[in-house]
Length: 215
Image 1: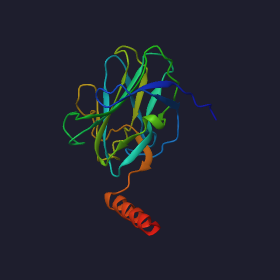
Image 2: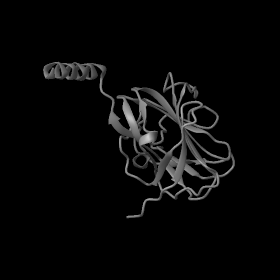
Image 3: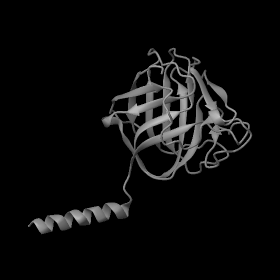
Image 4: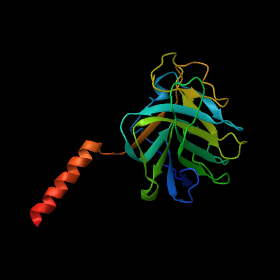
């Protein structure tokens, strides 16, 4: 088994937060919490993460999570140039063009840092201070290099001619969907489940009852 390679990233919470922390960048992890599907199983092709390209994938998160890990179908060359990964709310994950809403989370690695080499995937493992809450909803994730110049690798996307993920789309750098609607890149998000409001209320009532019995 190849030794997993790590890089230290800077994380920015929210639109203008000054909270920073360390995140581990992992080469070729197994998918955990796969949402859009594994492109390697669907006639994979790729699009370069190069020049000033910003590449996006929309998706639907069915249940809220306290997110501690994100995996993306990115093949990295192992050089420098930086890496930016941002997560946005979107109103319509199947919109005709890329229309981002509120920025939820932004992760970046500096342009002088050496990125790990990967063949199909990268993982971003968050430490305690960087874990964030993501309610059920519609989202889009955006990937780019850090210097708007260097080819740092490529996004691996499905290309079989079959739309295996119908709840989202892959948008290329001009904001339009990829040439074929069946193309998606791999997005996996994992973490601990956010309790449903009813469950949280029952838990609070149970705790209140326990405290009363102890009086």
